[in-house]
Image (cartoon, rainbow, N blue to C red; front, side, top):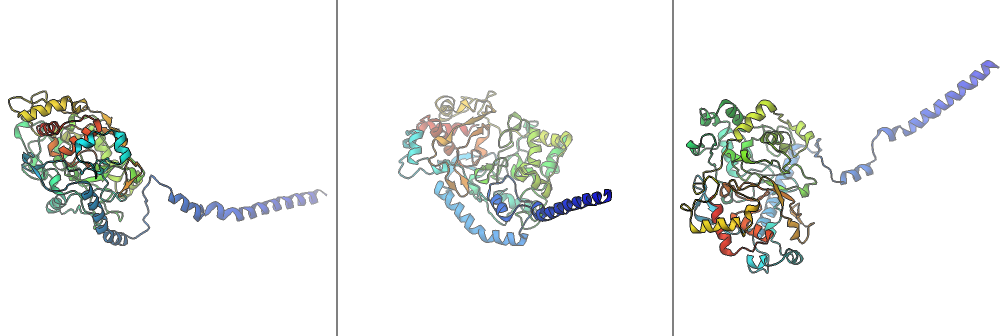
Length: 483
């Protein structure tokens, strides 16, 4: 009896176990095969914050496809530029950068059809401009030449010079740079140092690279600064220029340098997309700002979350080079700088890059009456008073080191309208950049949408409702050229 009872119990246990195994066998594919194809397709259709880390297409096929698409993409973007701007070469008489390049003049943003003049537009309220769809297209966010793709894109003269000196190729097989050279900063730019103002321009008319930095600066910089400069001209992997198959250069690349964009510590028009906004159609095109006078600034990075030059240097290498995506950074070869020495050395050199000399300004950053023209003096008064420019750009460096929201969305008729992959949203809070040396760092605003100082004055006159006269606007431009 006892043994029969035990046998029955064993049979029950075996039956239960067999049923469990059968159930597991039935469920096994569900548990371990992953989501079904419909769920995957649905998930892939949603916006994602991440770039793909595993490529599904061979590099040669990607390159062939993008090369074939390039002419149409370039043409479409050029049509947008010509619709928005007067791109002709019209230099201002007698106005040049430090080394002699002429400065472009005139309002280049085109008025909306049916509007007779900028004065007529400025007489309307924001609500009226919005209701009638009369906000100038050139005042809307400027898309990247291929906004859905994005990435670092260099002007041809920078590509040619780096290739000549170092043999590195900064050209992309999928895109060409978009803005005409006459709107870009002087190339190569002058270099002025806060530590050796007696030397004036120390660039010797050369683009500083790994090929010549030591000969140019040995004996002028201290050893830390010299090492910092070496790192600033050393190429490191970047999103589009790296050694992996996930790149946009024909050949594998050592990468880019800080001074490929901030050439000689100024700027060269190189564009990109900010790394800290998603999805792609909301990301801002980036106009590379000059590093001149960085020592007096207090906010850095595209969202101004960085508070020191050191933070800025470290962030650029770790995140901005890779669209703010740490997984992609690891894949392509992120350069992690050592904070106590490398970051410090780079920051120490950046912090001695000075603004160009401004011989008409006194120690308080104001015009010296004996040196200024009547128009420049009138422009200073309009800048300080009616134009409200000094509310955000006070002397001596013409920045308040904070951020302001000009609420451009007040004027935009359709905030969902897409222009070549960029949604025409408002701009939110924008950093107040210093205006010292402003004539040498066109184009203007955070995405380069304003090609001249005249465009910039017209833009702010409309947004601030200051109703400046034609004479007052011309006077302010004359004053800005003195800074």
